[in-house]
Image (tube, rainbow, N blue to C red; front, side):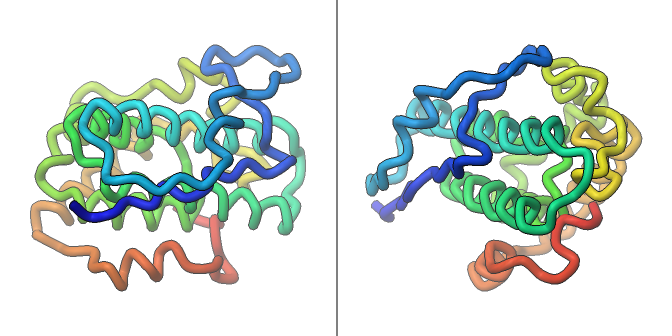
Length: 213
């Protein structure tokens, strides 16, 4: 069985606070679940039940980082923005071996959030690697929409944010569906994302990192 290096789900001091999915404008408290994952863990690829809990934890950490960054900043700080990008990309990359139906459903829900240019590029790469198995979970959001972001975080996150270079953390329904349609078309075309493509997508930020969807 291939070895899955969960590695350190790193929480930097700037982001080491939990985010309630039912957003209220209060100071968040530290997350015991996130803190418990700070130690490096090497283990076999999780079985399906473990994949679901791992996927949920990773998704919560990604959304928490994005929401806290968006909430706490009225202008962009390049250093903080780079740190955010690294955090999102690191955690997102850990979805690569998570391919149970339940984990795929969690991964598909992330399509309803703006992950930044590097995050979006990596998300598309991971989607291509998951291929046809992921497609039904993405298609449901083309038909039914994915309002999770605005419902869980609040309508204020649907507005363009200076902290995210003018992008909203919660993209509009039209933006989401356009992205999903293009992504599904690439999956149907059997476009691939190789190991080298994955490595490039998780590499250090480019000068225009996180500037465009």
